[in-house]
Length: 128
Image: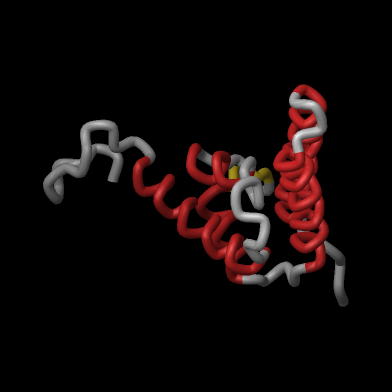
C-alpha cells in the first residue's frame, strides 16, 4: 500500500518550492532575469520529482541521514548553495545527476561538521 511521499520528502520539496519563490522575487529585482526564472522553474520541477520518488530511494534515505533533522530537511552550506543555483549557470543539468551531487555535497558537509580545527589524530577527536 503506497502512502504517498514521506514527511521528509514533503519537507525537502517544500524547501525547493520556497527557494523557487525566493528566486522568482530575485528575478523581479533584476528585470525578470532569465537565470533566476530558470532556477525557479527547475526547483519546482525538482520538488515534483522528489514527491514522485519511492520513499525507499537511496538518495532520499542518504539525504535524510546527512541533511535531515528527523523528518525535516535541514541542509548545511554546500547543499544550500547548490540547491539555490540549480540550473542557474548550467541549464541542461539533469535532475538525477543533481540528486547524486546533493548527496555527495551533504556527505562533505557532514564530514566538516564540528571539525573547525581540522581532522584530529585517532582517539583525540572529542566529536567522534
